[in-house]
Length: 269
Image (cartoon, rainbow, N blue to C red; front, side, top):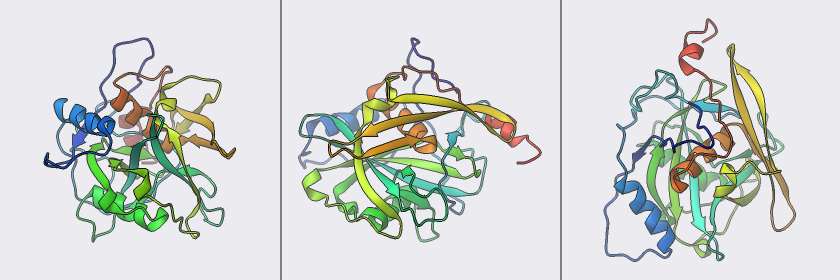
């Protein structure tokens, strides 16, 4: 499902995570407004909560493209979840927490990823998976993250269904990154809105999955400390969709997602 630039905004499908409005004060009014914005929008059906987990991968596409339009339909029984943890910087910028995978890992070493991983049988839902993995990987205390929504499943190149779970961090002072050296090389954050911009730091390439061509997006980013990272593939695809949902606009470029129905009908599926 390609989101076209210079066109009417195409809403991103998501499932609102159940939470009750309380009298507690939000530390950040901007984050509260985001949660309220999602609560006002029309919701899609809930995603199926059954099935074992899987591993994350470097490329991904929305499982709802083509004829897969129902969040309740899942084209694979392999399941994983990632945490898209947002917070507001002192300058008022909305930012997302990212990791660089350890160079010692056997797969996707050194690549940028969102905290997350495969669904364990002890996990009661996708939010539990994402929060558990984030705690294990970077020491993020789940009590400081308010889960507000799940995005539609994305299908990785390893045919794993990956659920992006959106969470809001109450305050950065409550978060002291503690990377697990066996899994994470470094932890950094990037501005969410950059994933909608066709700037000099953006590029894309055509790829193929089981005979179906699609576009992979790459974003180069340099932290204030001078660290250089490239966010691409599944991680970039997820953040494009989260940014489109939060800022309520299409990206400046065309996504060109593949036809998942064609992938599922492939003899290699």
